[in-house]
Image (cartoon, rainbow over all chains, first blue to last red; front, top):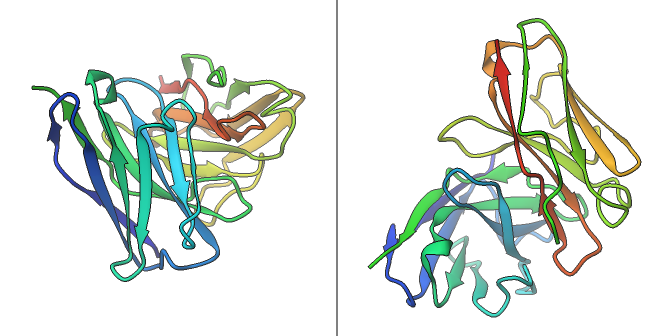
Length: 120
Length: 111
């Protein structure tokens, strides 16, 4: 069974870049059967899709964040990563990595989530 | 792209059935059979309960069922149990520039 685990700094200063990595076990980010995605949840609020990457490197991002978001994949480490630039307090959230099967448009496996706080 | 609309809270007694609605538009819920439902217990990651409107992943109890009519999807929990107390979110593929939208979330309370 696939498992996903987020890692990265829990505190980021305003205007800096948030960087997180998702390590996948029990599955391969190089599989053509899945997309790998990032989703966030501000404290006490709902879920927001940030973007996804395919093993080939093709990406799709939420237009509301498109200019600030970059997702990359490292098949040699079986990881994919999120970079969010110019962060503000509004970017404080639980960040989840998740998997969705190609053609299914659903998120079938999730990491435990990691809290990132934007504060000076 | 606006979030899909869900009731803020739904409650029921053990053994009862409850239904959570998820209302969107013809550009999302009404236009595609790509509605999913997720269960989230406090401090935990969301768990997929229903995909493609009415399909249950392996291991999910058959007390959970999904349906759709027009622009509104629904999740029904039958035989309500204490462990069902959680937040529930719907999601849908959309034809907008933001291809995935989530619902506002519903807190289910077992009385």
